[in-house]
Length: 240
Image 1 (cartoon, helix red, strand yellow):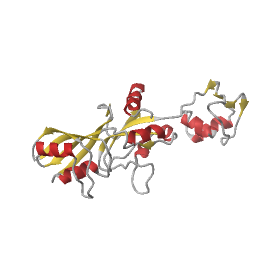
Image 2 (tube, one colour):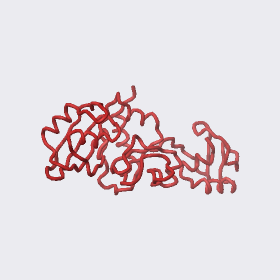
Image 3 (tube, one colour):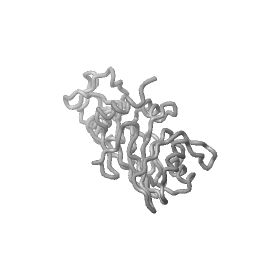
Image 4 (cartoon, one colour):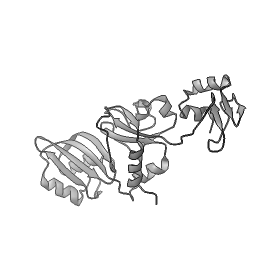
């Protein structure tokens, strides 16, 4: 890994600020001063010191975001804001990516990480990691809908969903529900309700596996996962 990227990842400043540290002779690698930002180092074996302080390398980053409406779950896009645009430069330096996706108009819990193995396990169809959504639905959601979702419904393309758990919170012209699914087909929640003649007008993911969205996390904000939260995700998607 390049020394400038490593130090930026370790919050020693932006790439520009790190290059200034290097130019000023503030960085040593294995006891030798280096001013070359392109120098490749091995953080596992090389001793890197900045201003007399030993650098402790952190390889992975784990973030919880309360995704807002209007932002897409992608790393880049030419015409829309992405979830990476909401991150501070120090966190973007780790090259995180969203774990799965939320539709542009869907809010709520989105995990971002650069840990590809954990992301793969959380998204693997074989793991059946549940995802829970809160939704407002036009029409009176009924016990019949609950049974249909429990049995699995046939989507518009003929795909039959796996059993899902539908919890009715309120019934009216616009009903409020919670839905837990174990797969992630395109627009799945919306299409499941369309299959029973209803339309989702608001959708928010509130839980992934056993990890709930932090109620104190404002819409459009994010924070680093706590150690116990990361342990929860690891338990939800154990190593094979």
